[in-house]
Length: 232
Image (cartoon, rainbow, N blue to C red; front, side):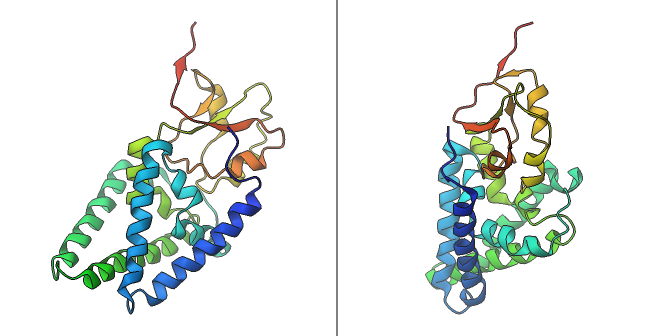
């Protein structure tokens, strides 16, 4: 299945647009709480898309993702995030922290739509600031590895719309891995005992950067989650 963007230039242009939305929310959301509902809309969109395509929303429509990838990446060392920092315990801990944050702040004035708009803005501000900070230690998308919405999307549909690799044409040049915003080990998929050969990572954000970078075009995305064991 062909990725929805004909070229990555289209994706990058859209990400600049998303980045501008993020900046608008971060700078004006405290004064105009209605902007906080754009954060809620993004959360709902991520939840819905997660049911059918895993973390596709993260790689293609997430405003903060665009901000981190197009702007913060310019100041990031672009290093892989250590396994301990993106472990299940850390992800669940971040998820619980944000749920508590929303619950405590929302309970202060639960009947006010303006207050809830401010709460959503506050969540966006705190998490984006934290994401920008840890990007200076590892890579621009480090936050995305522990983002609660990303975690939920991976739980809902991380085994859907996955990346497939043709082991016969793959040259193991690793250009795909160098282009991956999430720093995933992509070519390991060609050695896995599955048919078809698949990158079965729930952290894949389905952005298509690897597909575009591949010089022999051996990568493509397919819907579904079939991983039939090879018969020996």
